[in-house]
Length: 402
Image 1 (cartoon, rainbow, N blue to C red):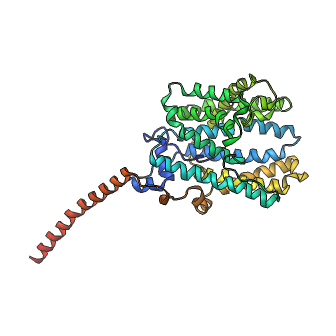
Image 2: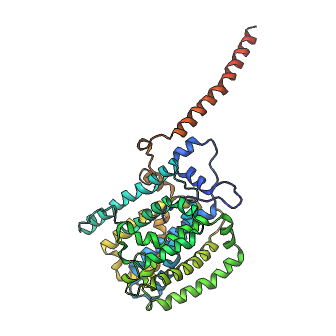
């Protein structure tokens, strides 16, 4: 889920900072300024991002189909317990090098703020056009999928703080627990989600490559099978007994109709369950290059664009067809959505939509004094390298003439 959703981390063998690789893969100004070759992307994280975004798209399709199907609802509950936490943990891991420097802030604006504004405008316009119901446009009220971009912007800006405090994860958990018991936070910028999902981002900030290597061991892959089997059975049991609103992390306990103290308790319980299932999911992610590995670079495109398809189908009433609410219909929709989001992550789509998702906005920013100094230094070095060549040519010419 989202670019942030975005970029890759080096394998544990690499000594380079993973987020430096991310910047090299996405920020053209950094590419031009750096004489170093682009670092190799780690297939494991590209695979994880692609598989996570496919699960996100499947979950959105199931939301429209589950209806009275207890089996599909159980699968939906299980999926929503870990798919966004997994994506947010990876996003936090890729944000470790964010320090508020000009280059990182430019990347944040072009890769997060601009897509947020574009799609925060596009989704209401789509509803107005397809559904025929006028929809207001508000940059303070994230619409549908855009909440993640808003959250990522806030999380990234606060990264230096989480690097500074002594116990960041307990502090983030405490904030999430308090938010779940505070109904008057309001809906601006979807702050409930920002605060309740915050611990997963902070956890990602504090993880190292070797932590991911731990869950990729064979023993973890084997143990993940009974864990997921039990989780699915528990989800089936919980369907009529639990309010699925807890999984969205966008409401307080009081708004879900329970006493305030239930919110902090559920935050801790869901954090533990989500973390366990995220580890199980990552244990199954292949570490070698697969046919879909390259698609991990385009997960932001798949995330934001598939929402337009889901919403169009919803507004048109296509999900209401009785055939789609039978097992074969549910499977067909699931496969179709997986194929669609896969195509949206491909290179041709990224090339067409790059001006929206990763625009070049050099015209909008002042050139950093350090960057100008480095440019002058490179120019002077180039001139010094060329001068000996000129003298050598003159000497060779003199030899020939003699």
